[in-house]
Image 1: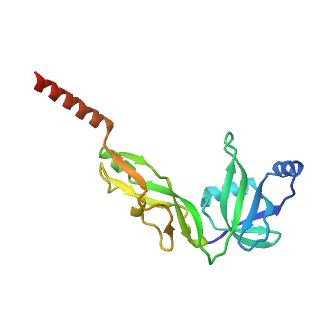
Image 2: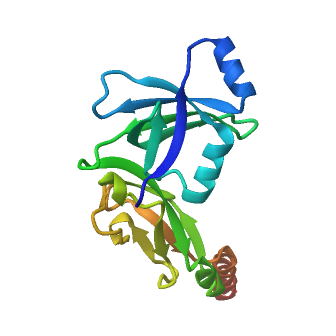
Length: 202
């Protein structure tokens, strides 16, 4: 994964400074992490950050450029306005390219339609995995193919294939997906059992 550059500016504390930055189309951010004695309050252009996330996702390796200095970093946390759905703050974590870090990676499921065409119902228990790897090895997503699952099957964390150089942190016996029988079939079976019982008692 090649780093994506994003420029940031240092910001001052205080409501007036925050309001001024917002009026210019910026949102507050912070940079902290490896090799830093203290964190740096920053601001990044909102539209630039939005385009970056839409194109590359949250697990992107970044070059955060501040006053001409470049910092290898990842997005550690994004805070959003729950009502408006807009980003209001972002945390950048400075990383070493030679040390593994932990990240949360979304799962992308394929083959659900095929299971449903066979009458199965896919029940999700887990939508993401926690992994460890070097910063440039973190996948944006992990593809999970469910097309071989049958009704009654269960997929565990240990069954998921991850890219080379990536280690899964989650419990290997945790359930990711279960394939259930249709509820109608279960109800029909129950009705048949009741009918048979009634006939036997006649």
